[in-house]
Length: 243
Image 1 (cartoon, rainbow, N blue to C red):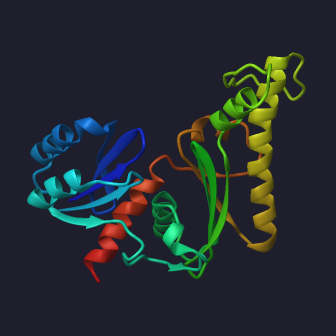
Image 2: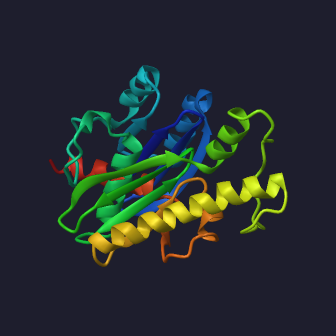
């Protein structure tokens, strides 16, 4: 069994895999790390290996704790990956993007794949059928768009998302919602259409915290996968076991 750990700025996401099968997953605040991981070790005593991915600067406490209990792999630019990386600055490539492409390689081998991760920012990541990662794009996420329009203007209010978004807003609130929500949906659809012209038979995966909300707004055919990042980390761990 594998223990998959993704430490984010706000929450830590954890999963247990048996080969490719997800047995358990949860998320919690970082200060609960030792307590939660101890419980997982008790509930899944056959867990033998772990991979740790983190966007925070220091994870020494967590790493030292894990190394006492389990074989640990830490995601870094030097780790062997199951794809070729053509990114011009691989040392700056986000660990979440690395994991997502690994997940795409595992789920859709030998296919052109675009992964759209809709979270705080929206990332677009493209891998080709020969398993080469090319790069993509990064743009503001939905909440960031709403906050920016409020913060950098004198009078525009901070609005909340709505599923009943209008194409033509008939108030300041609904106009902001239309611009934020429809604007992001149009952006995603346009990226998909643009990449599809150059990369034939393109498979598109949508993941991230805003996945379910945006699924309803998009016109293009996509595969929604809320655990692609965790699956990608599990695949990287398995890949490094054989190296």
